Length: 212
Image (cartoon, helix red, strand yellow):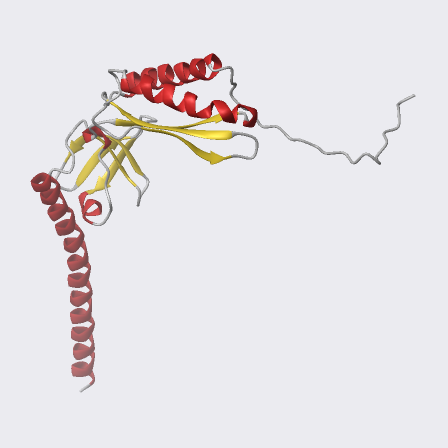
């Protein structure tokens, strides 16, 4: 009777070990299958390709895609370190592909002095005319040039437009050219770019002691 009880206990422990092993295998297989299905989703939907710059607002994922495997995708970060992302992640996060952008956005605020308020309409009109005549700016997209807000020490003008090119270096050169020409327009209208200032009002009754 004692031997039968021992054998039954051993059998129960063995069965429990088998079940635990099968559960562990199931969890491992679930992760493997999730990555495989994620790889199939990437392959079929093609949200990105090798060489694309991708980033996710949900995860710390940003860089250039180097390889797409069945289990993981290799992303080369801009600090040149590789990042291996399990394909299952791409089924659960939002993903942006800047490589497929059609334009680049210029969205700038230009600060003009308050004493130049009367010149603002002419400045804004001249900036709009300059942008409309620039072949590097897509006139088919929205172009906005307006007095946008009253700042603490300046009148803030909005410049909103899109470049034709998506190349980053070319975009930076175009943006620089636009900003330099805006500065010239402000100067040509006898106005000036504002900088942070503070005005202090001193009551007449206050007297300052002279330093001896």
